Image (cartoon, rainbow, N blue to C red; front, side):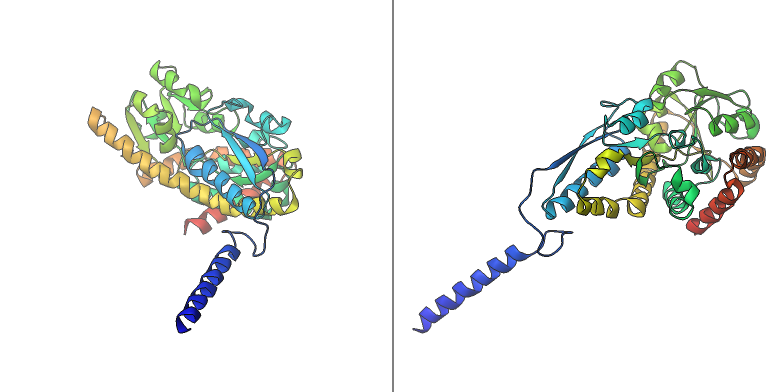
Length: 366
């Protein structure tokens, strides 16, 4: 009789454990949420970077996975198919692809794409400001969250988060850049017009505008002498193979304020509870995550480039001294003042935004 009782007790306990286990909520889900998944919501995400880059492997792929896990937990799975390397939309067509719905999600490659083109958000592209992507990401997010005029500039798309590149350093093919004078007459890659042209002209260099994807051949053939790009970009696009001399700046000569955006029709088609998950996994959360991913990739790629330089006999990376850095900063003062005047001529609070940016850089640098 005692044996039968023990057997029954074991069966009851086992059943209780099984029921308890089945009742546990999926990660990130609300207790009691549906477990059966409906037909998945399918979205496309296109970007121009190769699949080996931090954009793809450390930012977009993990984000799409998190979205799928969280939405599956509420029974409304979202599956995001990623098209890297310009396979769905070329580098210069990213904005148009998001706007027209060719892709549901994609990056803004330049602030020129936002409303008013090159507005207040372009303060992030002013020279010698940022020592890391993480700092830049936090500054951009706070500007967006706290200054209405900045938020208004992104109204043509649903802004998800900012993911600025790492700060740009000097990859030179013809000579080591150690002083301001060394920049005179050098043909330097730039991403387009606007501030980057002003920066290079203030340094006495000759701007050469082209997509980053064309930079390798341009450096190899002598069409340009210098590529100004983050370490991760120099490695991913293999610019380190066609350059010999590298100069590291205390703060990058520029960075690109990229951002993840979504087509408004695609956004509005999502159920409210799915939108809520997107919001939770965007904004400040993803801006910081993206910044940290870029910084980690930058350090790793810098190490790989140093190993390559040692192997082929290239000179070691030259670190620009503080006193020389201040000379560059002074030479670029007209660029800051021109930007402020351009914004205020448009009726925008240029000086206020510039001074706020400087304060935020100091805040997050601590």
